[in-house]
Every structure is written in C-alpha cells, then in structure tokens.
Amino acid sequence: MTMAGVLRDEDEAVRMSRLSAEQGHANALFFLAVRYLNGTGVVRDEVEAVRLFRLAAEQGNADAQYNLAVCYDKGTGVRRDEGEAARMYQLSAARQCKSTV
Image (cartoon, rainbow, N blue to C red; front, side, top):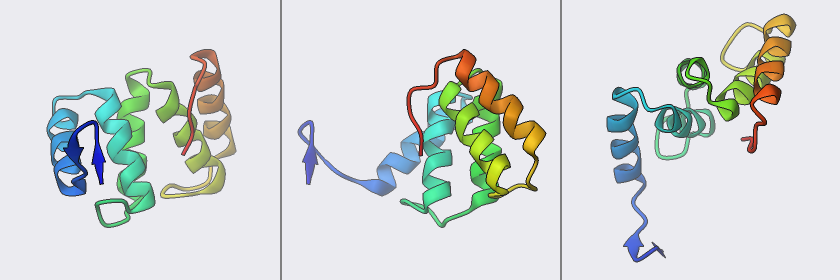
C-alpha cells in the first residue's frame, strides 16, 4: 500500500525512528514505544516500551506521559504503581494529551 506516494515499509519506518530516537527526539521515542508495546514491526517488548515512553515523557511529551501512566496503572512492563500512574496522568492532562495507544 502506498501512503503519500511512498510504499509502506515497516522495517524502514522502525529504522528511521531508531535513528531519530538515538538523537533524543521525543516523538520518535514515543513512536518506537508504541511499536514495542504493540509488537508492530518489532518483537513485542513491554519493558522496552516503558523505557522509551519514560524517555519521551521526561521531555514533556504528553502522549508518552499518558501512555506511561496507563502502563503504571495496569502494570504493563513495569510494577503497578497507582501513585506514579496518577502523577503521569496529571502531567499529561496539564499538557493536554491528544492521543492514546
């Protein structure tokens, strides 16, 4: 399938996102975290997803903060921690999170 005149290539999307994430770009970190959480284009790894969400959240990415909160709330890839979940939910709300996984 083509998107914007380019063939869809999951491997290339992951590769390019990794390059950006290695440079510390919050959106790339978030994108990769979602992929690891869902196992899209990579082997599913909830612990890695949490690590990447955390890195993006530390940069103020509201979507990463929200998804990290969900991980803490449900115990996905991390020990369940309602206090940390509440803190992350509050941070994401303050930044007006727009999307969820």
